[in-house]
Image (cartoon, rainbow, N blue to C red; front, side, top):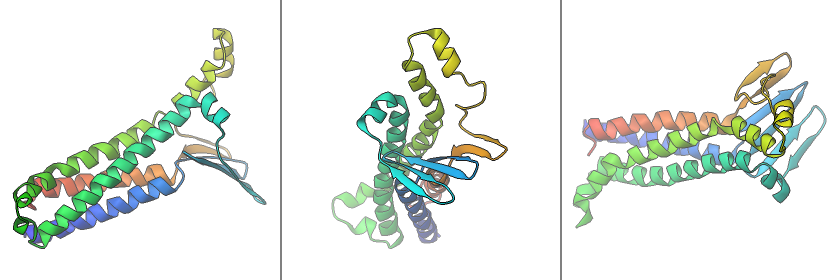
Length: 206
């Protein structure tokens, strides 16, 4: 039974790895308005309309004026990458356990089961941090807006959220802003990693 659970856990880890890879490669946020869509990730903005597609690489000036905004993007990406690395380690250890090889490894064979049992806790933490940090994206954008003005009056005039411009998710007639592929992938990765973690700790995989 333990071997079956080990392979189930291994499959969950592999699926989580795929999701983390998608999160790294794809776009995290999008805005749709009147048939035009803007996608963004840490190193690229893409604008699509009915007739054209334009890709823009953020300049140093854009990153400077949007330092809080890009800090959120980079932090979410960093924890996604860390989760990916830890999941690789967890996948190898879990597979070795399922094949009955783990305990046969000299010297470290007695240590690896303990590592395998709890390494996914770290992966869960990294996935959740990546997911939760990204929730602050629009608030970070609002802080960047306020940093451009010295006057509280101007801050209130140009950086207020009366129309929901800084809501994480907003939808209306012919308009939508909210998370897209990468963030959804990291949410799924979090759920899969939690499932594998429960199997490894409570299911007798190690």
